[in-house]
Image 1: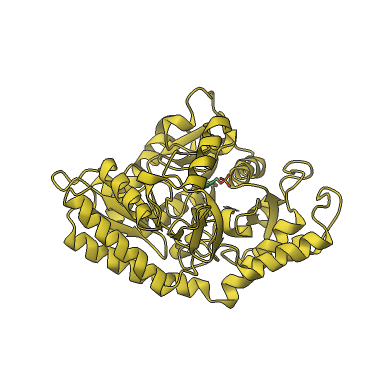
Image 2: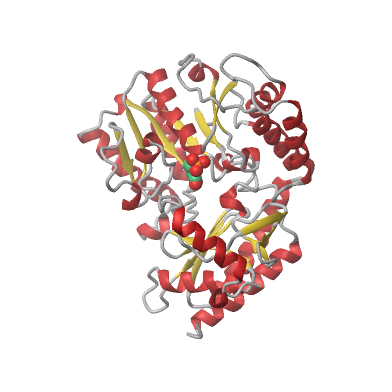
Length: 442
Ligand code: PLP
C-alpha cells in the first residue's frame, strides 16, 4: 500500500519530472499515483503497490483495465492496419461498429452514426446536427454540467469558473437551466409531478420572456448528471421536459459519455427513463479508453449534414473501432449490464448502511455501479469538502482509488467487472476511513 507521507522513490521521481514539464491545464494535483499497469479493477503503481480502482479511468474502463479480449482485438487490428483515411476509404471494423451502435441505441427509429475522437467533439457535433436539422440557432443545457473541453462542449458546460476564465467569449446562443437536483433544491417534500413542474419553470419562463421556444434547436442533457455529483432526475421531469421538446419542435439530445456503455446497468443512461433521444453522444468506455467517440442519431437528423461537416483524420480509426467492437462484445458475453445493476444495488445498500452509522455521510444517490456519496458537516448538513478530501486520501493510503467531485461527493464508478471480494474490500476500507475522519483521527 502506498504511503503518501513517504512517497516511494520511483513515484516521486516521475511526479517531480512531470511537474517540471507538464502544463498545468490537464491534471488536478491529487495524490501521487503513477500507474504502471492495470488489470480488471486493479491498478499497480511504478513502485509495485496495488490499488482497487473505484474510478475506472473516469468511466473509460467499464469492462476493466486491459481486458484480454480488448487487448487481443487491438493487437490483431494493429497488425492488419493501424490507420486508413476515413474520409476516402472503408474498413470492416468501422462498418460493423456503426451497425452495432445503431442497433443498440435506444428506441426503434432507424439510426445513423458518425465518429469523432473525444466526448468533447461528439458534443460539438450535437450542436452542429441540431442546428442544421432544425435551422434554429439556440441550444439549452444544464447548470453544473460537464460536456467537454472544446469551445462548443465547453460552452455547453457550466461547472466551474476555471473551465471558462480567460477563454471567453464562449460559443454564442447557448443557455443554461437548473439541473433537476431534488435534494439541492430542497423539494423532496413535493410530489414527483410538482417537482417536475418546479424544475421546468425556469425553462418555461425563459421561453416566455427572452428565448423563443421555436428558435431552440435542442436541449442537451446528461441522463444522470455525472460530474455534478451523480444526480438522478425525477422520471416525471424527464417526461415533462421531453414533452416540452416535442410540443415545441426541439430536439432532445443526451450526453451518454459518462453514463452510457453499461454504467447504469443498461446500455444507455436514458433507457432508465424509457426515452428515445433524437441524438446522443458516446465516448470514454466506447473503445475502452482509446480515443473514439460517436454521435448516434435518428437517421433523418444525421442526414442533415454532409461531408466535410464533421471529420477528423483519426475519427473511426480501425484500431479504436476494433477495440469498441470487442468492448461491446465483452459487455454482452459477460452479462455486465446485469452484473453492474446487481453489484450497484448491493454497494448502494452498503453506503446507505454507512449513512445510517456515520453522521458525515449525508446520503447516496445513483443507479448501477454509479453512485455519489455526500460527505457533509453533521452540524449543518452542508457539503464538507475538507472531510471528503480526507476520506479520499486515507482511502488511497489504504489501497483504494476514489476521488471526489462537486466539492464533497465521493465518485464511485468502479469497472463493471470488479469482483465481489474486491468490492467488499474497498467498501470496508471506505467504511473504516469515513469512521476515522468522523472521529477526528485524520
Ligand atoms: N461529457 C461528459 C458527461 C463527460 O463526463 C466528459 C468527460 O469527462 C465529456 C463529455 C468529455 O469527454 P472527453 O474528455 O472525452 O472529451
